[in-house]
Length: 365
Image (tube, rainbow, N blue to C red; front, top):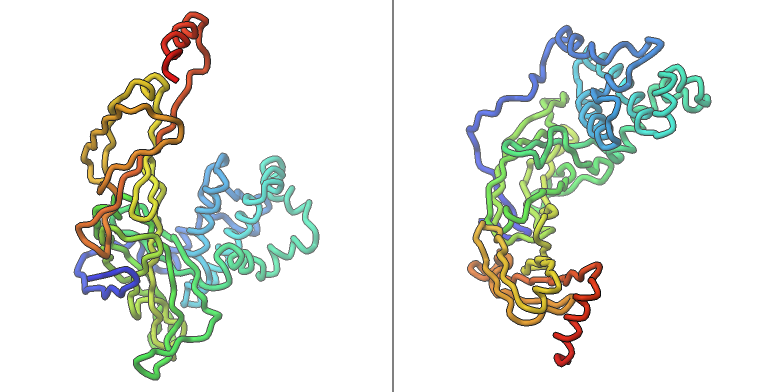
């Protein structure tokens, strides 16, 4: 059983996962797959095709495309020498395309004049980006952080899109295991995005993680299926540790640990405040004065009927006991549902209606 900041040991799962891609494809197959990128030596390159995005792609679309392709074709992920050379060329093309399309001014120039227009406007320092073989790596480092990204995907949903990543602190000092004198690789942390419904009801999240391993001195990517039992009431910041499931940064070190840290997705109806849930209710002025009835749909799909007979003033609140979030530490206990009322006033009134209101309200104060 997992408590907050506790450790979850993963079980052996026999689930068959259809691999997104066969890792050890022949160079000929890869070369055919790479054909969409074009040749970097061509005079005019289609940067949009290289990244696989339309010409009206948003800044976010371009970032997502670069993230996916840069992680896939980074030379460090390819052990075979022939594969590595092909990957290096593709990595340079991807970097060049992203460097241009992610910059508003360069993108405008490219859209008007093509890649030759871009290179014609470059300083000698900028030109080195495309010829020295150094800056594509610097661009990758700037985008992901100073170290190798660690990728993982969700088996059942889109919370963790393919090639989602977090940065490993490979530059740090190896950790020494408290139970032995064996030195371990770094511990890595990643956000586990969960909806309020998942945190209210609890759920299971199955994730396919890809971590670096060594066979002798040769490194390779190893896939692993892990299951996280999400308990009702977990808070932001709850951590789950999978010992030995992180990257192995050296054949001389034990694999590091993998830590998931809970982060709550934004909800369209509720705001979480500790164990309480806040619900905003807009009330027309006439109903605020005369009373009304409304229904709030709970996170477990129940209808909470609320009747208001008192006069509702602007920014007033009402508490509905035990309709908030469950407590992970005290099963059976729940927080409260807080209704925040926002009184909506009319934008205009006719003279006749104003007169009626004056008469009705004259003796109420």
